[in-house]
Length: 299
Ligand SMILES: [Zn+2]
Image (cartoon, rainbow, N blue to C red; front, side):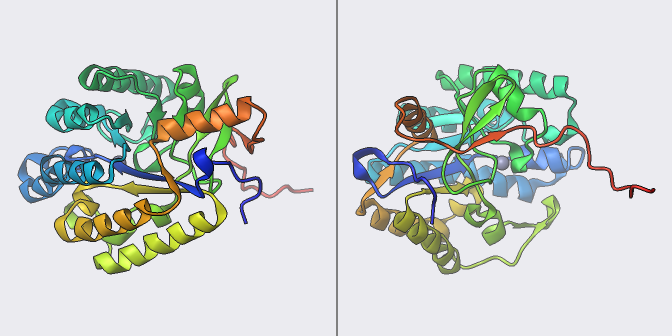
């Protein structure tokens, strides 16, 4: 079902990447800047991520003996440096997720460029490691984003949705490896219920969410894609949910899969392309630089 599937290391049937976006309390300042000091409950719900969920998730990763990728807004790293330090100390990858979860759609190209560079410098300083990957907050990938990522030497993006396996983005005279996401593997549709921030979905049980993720896994295992989660510590890291997820991950760990960071997946794909072992799909961005005219052509 996947045309031209990528061959994974050691003959693994699919790649597995449990990625988290540690948005923490950045969300309250972006959604409700002036009211944020009064939104104590919403802030506490978001702080659960770095304070309680991250240590829990890292403990599971130690049990599984895997290294994974965390996307972090730089402001969150500045506000919760201990959480980021513990990720780095345990050998996980940190990648960039904006400065304070701002939307790229609100920026001119120059503003987007400024905040990309400022955020990356801050995250690299706190983490003490080079940042190679980007995921746009709420998938706000603008017409300028690909070119700016190429210009700044990013290796991969993980915000777009045009395939089931990595492909190549061409923009601004260079290339990125795209490791695609999709809403079916994001935990917002499962769990994001917080009226103060404007999210109101019927909260699923952990077993309903697991059924969804498991069926997605079965397809990737059968056809050779990347089973990649887009999860949030304040949502999926809560006790009942993570209790169920840890069991699922321990089960997956026993299968013929390759657990990897997105940096490792991007490097593997690039190596396969350079060695002539894989011909990727190539997508030129931006798709459009101007809106489509809705005016009817008149004769
Ligand atoms: Zn986010």
